[in-house]
Amino acid sequence: MSCFLALVRALVLSSLLTGTRASADTEKKYSVWMANSIISRGQGVLTGEGDSSALLQAGFTQKGFRRLLEQYSGDSSAGLIEGYVNKSVDSTISTVSVTTKLTNYPLDRLSNGNNLIDLFLETGDATYRQSFESLRESINLQPRNVESGLWYYTYKNWSYLDGMYSLAPFYSYYTGLFDQDNTTAIADIVLQLDLLWEHCYDNATGLLFHGYDESKTAVWANPETGASPHVWGRALGWYFMALVDTLELLPVERQSEEWTGLLDKFRTLACAVVQSADEASGAWWQLLDQPGREGNYIESSASAMFVYALLKGERLGFFESATLGTDSPNNDVEISTNASGDNEMEIVATSTSHAQVADKAYDYILHNFVVHNGNGTLSYNGTVGVCSLNSTASYEYYVQRPINYDSVLGSVAFILASLEHEIKDRE
Image 1 (tube, helix red, strand yellow):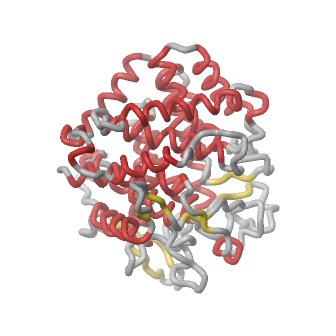
Image 2 (cartoon, rainbow, N blue to C red):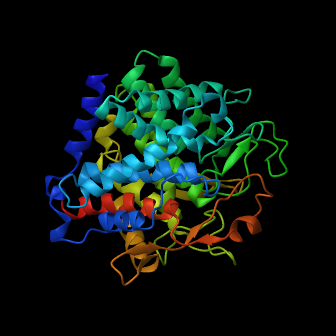
């Protein structure tokens, strides 16, 4: 247990620049600034009065703030932010500690697990362990389809990209610390990501559709794959972040089949994400398979998620040929037309820099979605509300969902993107 934890923390610390630990008093950092603004609004704490994504909002806030503390442990706001992480975690304990009730919540509930583990390791408080053990056991109780794919929620046989950011990093972290010999668990983590890839991969764009119905009976299900009909930006953002975070945490050798298989998916998806960026803004559409269509728009949470995953992947060397021990160049995606006239994805060598694409998008986000309130706080705009496959899953459904102001699903994604951008700027 201690060896794996030490390795994870050493990797995190060694990959962050020493210069980023200076006090934020010397330079205004958007990551810290937005975190303090979220705290001022009392967001990311479970109160029982939030919407259906409240448990996810708490877990996402905890993960973003924890990442900030790793990067800026010496910041003057670190004590405040650390206390707020503890407050958020404590607010979820009564909800996540009853294992038998947890499958009534989406897989998003598992986003709270990582910080429950961290607080247990820091304090030894058995209450935290009971809570994350309850979350872990709930994975075993979650209904599955005939391929052993986890249902995202209570909708029979429906699996979503969304749940992977909460599931896979927690499952990986727990297994590495407390269940290292459980090869079945490691295989299950990879399986969940693989099944979504197999069912939802879009040959025309290289992106992934929102989810799939294994039974193929949903009104929106593709009759062959079961996939839903559109590529929703934030669902893809959750999956993309899940890949990069799981590659960092999965307790296997870097040359193992499990790890290299996930790396291949991450690199392939990164190429397609780069290719799908809007040429004018550099950011990403609400529906990525319908760029420029009337009603579609550039969406702020997915755009920040893609920036985070691209910059983190580059920082960790996941786009370098040496990562796989080959002599192949960095790859990108090109859409070509085959002899039958169908679009297909082709991996080709290009000079495109993932960081350049991410930087352009980050600049757009900073100037179009970040709002300076004039009272020392920041707000965040342009984040779509919850989009569910318990719907028609039509184009009109996605583009007519409400836009939420100051949603932490967007503002925390911005914190993560900013942290990676701030590291890069100090290189």
